[in-house]
Image 1: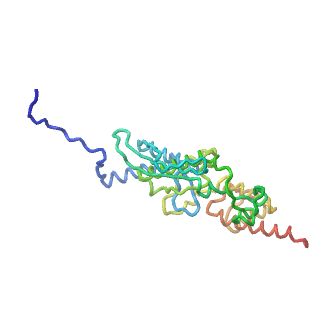
Image 2: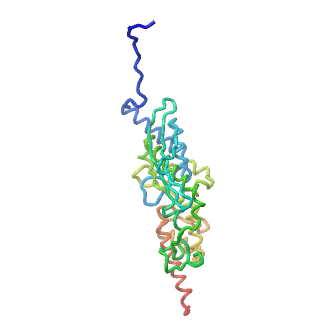
Length: 302
């Protein structure tokens, strides 16, 4: 039976309306975030240090941990800007990451990320002269100074093998950008990328690494808990020192006298303890020694 009686309806809060936190609540929330980052997120797995950046860079595993900590979900969708052209060998993947509250369905943040095969790190290879493909002349290539010798830029002849990598990079960029906004973590992390990231995530982590945390933003790394050079950088130091035939004793003396490192009972400074902030200066010295050794070998009077 129809009726004209008014039925009262209880108001339902809109899922996008968020109550403002008071100062005490905001301080507690940010403190909890910092404690989570410090205790649960690992350097070279969840985040990394890029030379020249004041803040650590957030990586995909770290973004996933932050979403879990905040109880948030993330949905990735390919956008209409995606281009997959196998005939021309051009690939441009675009994704939109939507971070949402699984309990209410409320969208917390969205961000787009893209990656394409024309980006320099995918489109080109930097090769030493003896690695150049047959028929490619070094005079026709752009060159730059490498760690050991001049490197020459050539087109990547096998871009198709990187299609999956390019696709994953696009989705990762979107995920990290949306996570930083949703979790209010931009004060701690940046989204700058490093070539070390993909390889570092595959490296085994020590128990000590699990306790390392990003340095506070805009502050220097503590001398009591310094960021050390990576395994790749240590291998580079070893390769250059062997190539230049620099005695270990000379390297130890230089590190002790110029950078203040302490030698052990054997009179050595382990390269595993070299700080990241000292790497550039150390490499410059090694390079000078290497160049001198090369000139000496080329001089027939020696």
